[in-house]
Image (cartoon, rainbow, N blue to C red):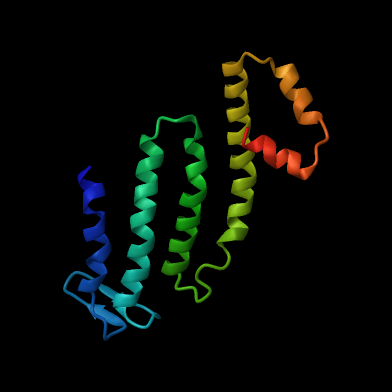
Amino acid sequence: MLFIAATPFIFYTYKNFPSDTKVWETSFFTIETAYHSVNTYAWFVVSKVVPLSLLLLWFFTCKHWWHWIILVPIAMYTFQLWGIFNESQGLDEVELYYLLPLMMIIVPGVYLVRAKLFAKARGADLKSFEEELGTNRSLWGQIKDLFN
């Protein structure tokens, strides 16, 4: 609870970094960046770390069956953070190519779990579920079925 309450303060820590230099030296560490300034670099990092940490907290504390779908935005923020650390100039351009295989596994898996849970809740057997999956329907019919 304290961490969630502190996230706005954590986000604005980037304002404490120098905005007029690309190199920041202290007695403990040195930060050197290719971005406009250390402040800009810190803003990019914090703007990805805060949502990523909140999503991770949500993923590990969620008790619902669908919590695996949260891995998709977690992976997206992770790839974006990786791009920032590598100081990629095409910052948010390629993570979709890495996310597609993950989404191709997670999204149908979560949908199948959902379908099995709803089949048990309705008392329907899996044979009728398999028959329903095998029927040919129009695109509009499939979209309507998603919201039933």
